[in-house]
Amino acid sequence: MEETLYRYNPWWEGKSGSSLFNRPGYMDTLIEAFGNNRLILITGLRRVGKTSLMKLTIQHLMDHSAIDPKKILYVSMDDYNLKDLTILNIIDGFRKMHNIRFAEKIYVFLDEVVYQQDYEIQLKNLYDSQNVKVFASSSSASLLKERKHFITGRNRIIEVLPLDFDEYLLFKGIGISRSDSHIRENEFENFLRTGGMPEYVISGEPSYINELVDDIIMKDIAAIHNIRQPGLLKDFFLLLMERSGKQVSLNKIASIIGISVDTASRYFDMFERAYLIYPVTRHGKTNERLLSPKKIYAPDTGIRTCFTGFRDKGSLFENYVYLRLKKYHPEYIRQDQAELDFMLDNGYVVEAKYHNEPLTEKQQKLFEKFDEAFRKIVRNYDDLKALSFK
View 1 (cartoon, rainbow, N blue to C red):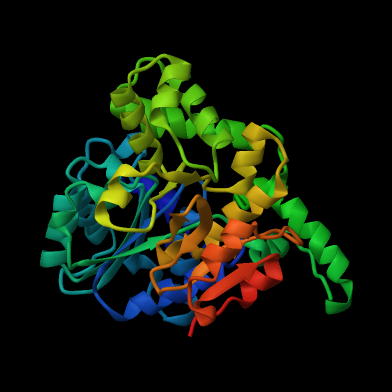
View 2: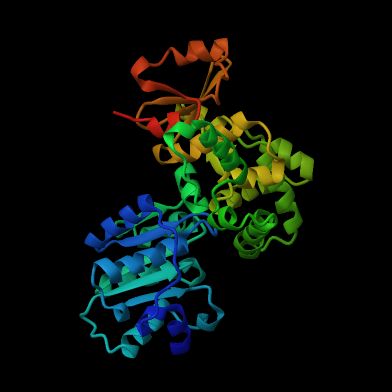
């Protein structure tokens, strides 16, 4: 174990980690979390940058908070060398290695914590019994949905999304002056095509996205749920991507690929838990919410274009607007045979219309039913960035 932990923690020997791109919005939230003792749960799509944020947080602890590097432990819980050890075993070994008294505070970063059996009970025991600040990550929403009651009230959840457009420009090393707005527009369309998966933005490797989705389907869905025909999962996902931004009929998808509706419903839930789709319910009364079909969005526009091609820029833009507004728990509006994109939990109605695309007559009538101060149309990235809610 000692050799494995030293490999994960080069700062114990005075070595610096590799340089990483900063994501200030998430880092501000993580740094703010230093001031309380709650468990910090970092979730999101596989390879979206959770590990990098953990290592940036570690660097900040050492550089700006003057924390002794030997009181900081990072470990990936899916490491085969650690499979026979519990979280508590690893932390006990860590304290012994560096002669850290039980009363001294330590900072522990547990990557992909759901690979550890009974992780939620171990996190609860760790929280209740030790002087420790824990940051844990998972690429599965099971961290949020399954057996969460063990750590309810003890945690804060931070979901990491793919890069936004400003982060994309930073990662690509592209600077655009105000006088070059036409370049900004061209780069935004490049961004819609490429998406915001950090490694893909930097490398541009053509096979990256396909391999990423295959990896998630095999490791986070098929293996965990014992699916014997993973090819069906890939077909299912392709059909979902083709319907991104639209209402989804599981009956129709089930019929196309030859599975039962119950199986299609289970697959749908598995993809949601792996962050490969985001479902959106209809705004309205309880029966409307429950009985109406859900709309879905891709977790990243680059993932969508990989499977459907770069077409329908308006729909891709709507997908991106959803991702940026996700924290407001959007629902779609459908009344009088007209549909509007998003009703947010703060009361605002937002319609994404890329460039000069007009509202239909029915949409306009529906849009005008809402208070003028609470309705917004976004036509480009600048409109979205300027969107403010009073």
